[in-house]
Amino acid sequence: MCILQDDVVIFKAPEKEGDPTIITVNCPDKLGLACDLCRILLFFGFNITRVDFATDGKWCYIVLWVVGKATTKWGLVKKRLVGVCPSCYSASGMSYYRTELLQPPKPPDIFLLKLCCHDRRGLLHDITEVLCELELNIQKVKVSTTPDGKVLDLFFITDTRELLHTKKRQEDAKEHLRATLEDAVICDIEKVDLEVTACSQASPFLPSVITDETFNFEIPDKHRNGTSFTNCASITLDNSLSPSHTLVQIVCRDYKGLLYDLMRTFKDYNIQISYGRGTTKQKKNCEIDLFIVQADGKKIVDSSKQNALRSRLCRELARPLRVAVVSRGPDTELLVANPVEISGRGRPRVFYDVTLALKMLNLCIFSAVIGRHVIEHREFEVYRFLLQEGDCLSVSRNKIEERVWNTLMGWE
Image 1 (cartoon, helix red, strand yellow):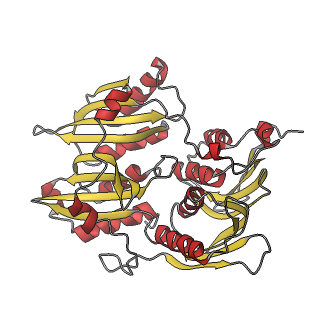
Image 2 (cartoon, rainbow, N blue to C red):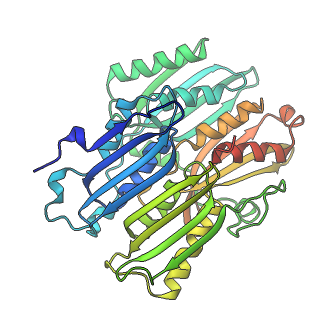
Image 3 (cartoon, rainbow, N blue to C red):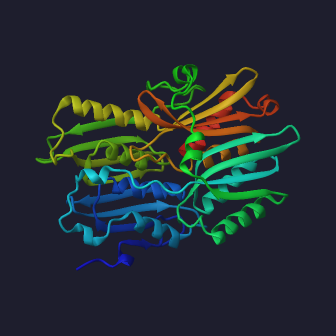
């Protein structure tokens, strides 16, 4: 007997103000399901305060305690969560480790949004906020400012709802943008073919000066402004407590997207989490216990594999993103990089958070570009913001870097 679709994802409202909402997911399992669920919750701006999940390799049961905004569209959140859950019919005879499950889905259609309007402080963040509300994902962006105070923005976007090819969806997006910008706007949305998308791709390799000086993969003890940088307090692997599973115990400082980064790492390593539990203590430290097995269904006994996994987890938790402010001659450039999943997806809401941080600092963005680049044999999404020269004189580079980092980590 199958579970009805309405019962796959269930919300339990908080009993009193300030308590978390409880989300229960009960469905067939698949490789990376926890990662996909956490990614959706991160996209909608949720903070996960506690999690419990268990699976037998075919069926899983996940409970998440989340805190969101009062304006959360719960019906839409449920639709997105149900959308990544396998059908209950797939549980019959399903193999958890089928290699085809690792294959990325068919790439979505890409549309080009052209926007021209008068420049002002916070403009780029306001546009990004509208696109997030409309569930339009920014894949690439090119922003430039003309000498007469106008901006020309080119956004390469995809539509979570897969309706942007329709006139109604396009007009709805344009109307929301016009209502937000409140001035004359030239706005156009058109589907682009693969040739146009390919021509817009940046070089896969960054200039060596950026790679060497900015995106160092060593785990530092301190941030450039002297604040603590290392979030990874303790990662322990233990094979003595279970005859069939390796126990991974993690204690670290909590931050926005922590659970997503963990699940993304396990997904990329093709590791199954059979049972797990995690909680945030006093809104600061997070304690997580995970019972895991390899792709062959066995525990991790090889010490070299244990060390590799421990090192990777510690690196991901210590520096889930890279942030740096550098000089480009007389100009100031902000760079932010985050690793891309093997499936090809980048971390959600990075562009939103960075533009929000710059808006809070009252800084104007002269130009912005998003590209995919290979750094240290891994693919990264790299965001490059060229800041207005006059504005940067009033805000130190350390303060810019600190504000962007804290906003990305949810430490505002």
